[in-house]
Length: 248
Ligand code: MN
Image (cartoon, rainbow, N blue to C red; front, top):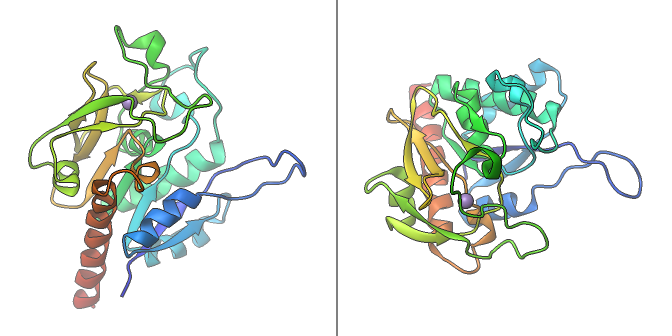
């Protein structure tokens, strides 16, 4: 039985038709490759519909995307804060808080590490070049391929991400201009870039809660360890499903 992995989608305006549509192709591909069953979650649903979908999920994947509105962590908008998607903030923060409260597995990628941290009560740097001294270049998305290795990450030995990848140091891509600032209660830092920027966090209890600032889904073809990271999340979702089934 493949565990059901929910992936909240995003608002997007199509260049030609001016209509909203959904994507998330690389994330669904990665979950499928890792023997999970990905399911996309639309935005702007009735809360009863969100709840009905949430209850059926075995895991929640928080994908990459635009910036979270700083009001969600109690800050004014920095001039260099980027595009925001309030519908997505609303849906993702709610689903994440529900999942954290119940120990449903959560895995965050890029914006997803930020979503996880904000949902749990943490804050973000709104623009690394303006707010982090001597920072490396973390924003490599302008015209470059998404699999360019930008900097190293040092992982805490024994952490979920280190165990998932099977290493404690590796080279990663970097497609972000924001990062975790104050780490939320219930989370801890398990990976950093050489400039100190937080690149991995995880939960402090036994439930699978983990997130990375890099994009493993864009490195699947280059580095087989990246699929192992998705597989460790999907395996936890399967265990969560089986434990619930036993309890009923
Ligand atoms: Mn980075």
